[in-house]
Image (cartoon, rainbow, N blue to C red; front, top):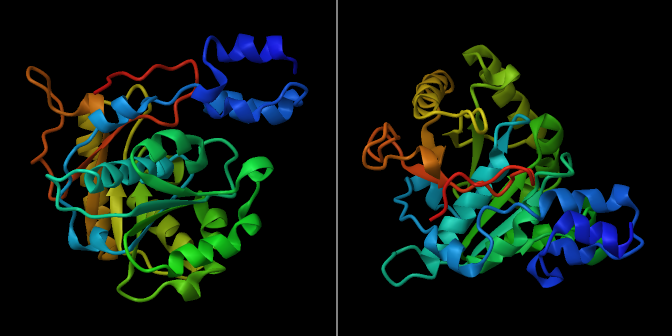
Length: 303
């Protein structure tokens, strides 16, 4: 593609405003498309908007461990959960009025999905003070083997909080099996992100099966569940409530706690609406800002 094609797609954004700068004139469209698709649509686009998105979280004990991993079926929204939690913890560590301390890092372990991956949100994450561990330069779209030494070193490093965004389904979870010996009991919590609207997790039996497949592939046990039932732009507050009840029942069956309920910021309670209230559930609510938006969709609400 030439410079005129790139300008047409990216609009008036300056090269320094986005990782579109990685797309050089002459890059084949097939290779450039991922950058175009993923880097023109962050919900929070600058340091000011990222810092304004801060919400104080009171985390349950399992989420206070040094390593937090998020796994799930395709379409569960695990990357959104991982990125948003990393953002909130990074912002909390930067504030004097929040007791949470950093540093906060996030590792992109998704070798399955070439689009919705943590590395696509590197700029807003860095605005929140989060260290993003990912392939650099020409290896930006490379798979796990490129960064295995760095991943292992970062996991073994003491201190702070490290969040892992793991690929979808059992295929993605296998990435953990290569480094499972680096996980020490009591030092980590793996969470299954549950979207009750997805085909394989729309029934309790199906969700239980997916959980077992993830644990088998990773060679590690889950420590909790995250409720993230959604229907993209069609999600309502009642979908969030229904998803929590589903995930809570699943937790009773598999003996795992629901540690978080994730809900897009526009669905949370505001004066005069039927939004989800912060005290509705037996766990914290993680407000979601949509980092993984297609370019033609706009963020419903900004801080």
